[in-house]
Image 1 (tube, rainbow, N blue to C red):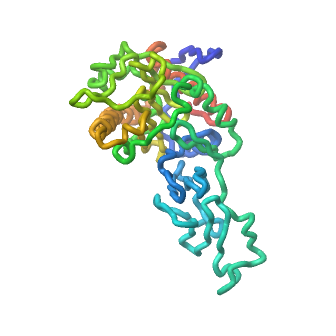
Image 2 (tube, rainbow, N blue to C red):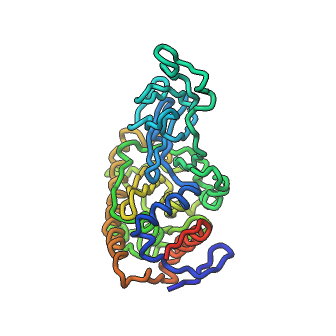
Image 3 (cartoon, rainbow, N blue to C red):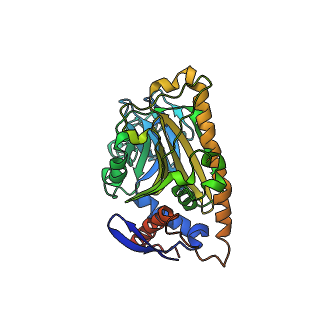
Length: 383
């Protein structure tokens, strides 16, 4: 069933995607190449490379990439491959004392990407050769941006600027966008593997319709009727008017951002920044859930939590930090059965994409509108 959806000043009929868009491995590969490969997508989190010398390998749709914090503290992303014979350079996160060394023939690269050492390249004991121009054989960089603690890449190098990509959400969340965030560390980060297509994770996150049945604990204080729908260009989601910070036994709570408008006293918002980043903002913390597509029916969810004030990282707040991480983990785990059930349902020949409630599913329909537009632009057909 097509629903007329108003997004900004545009009104267009939105039809749910067909089963093939969720189940076909060939479509999945084409989607990653044509849509993800030509968009700004979230690759990781800045705190994964906290200090100069830290390197962190990441796969994006099976493509090997490398987050690097160089000697000057600049975060860079390179293709994680040696220019010599295509060997993967780094296989696990680590902190390097000096250069990035290829484990195959020991070609070495500076953290800034330049090729520095080519041992025996001209024969035993000859570390240079006229045919090997180090100046043009550095690591291949990837267009990169940072925002709200997240690292974004544009593999094509041809997408509109990141500032343009994020502008609508940056305007909406201007109260948070330029503030320092303080990563919660290993206690406040985790990953979940889910047997579903990445799009179903986005669709589920966008709407609050399922709260009473899937999240009864959350709905007991942040009820369905306390929520509202958010739809803007490039993102959609929901907000609540009933956010309640966690309290310690002695009545203490995590420190909040200073100077926030009153709307955030009991307000919080949760949006999907297309295609793969699910974000939440509150007066005392933010979180991000990065979707990593593994297959047409498998997705890994990487979750990280940041706090408003460095005081939140002190030992006296360890209990509250752990409770907060456990709360969000419980919420995201409650969603697993739902999105996996929808994935199984996409194998039913009788299912035709379903219908949208014009009121309760508007944010999900907005995501469908965005992605079908991108499909048309890149020559994909999701019916």
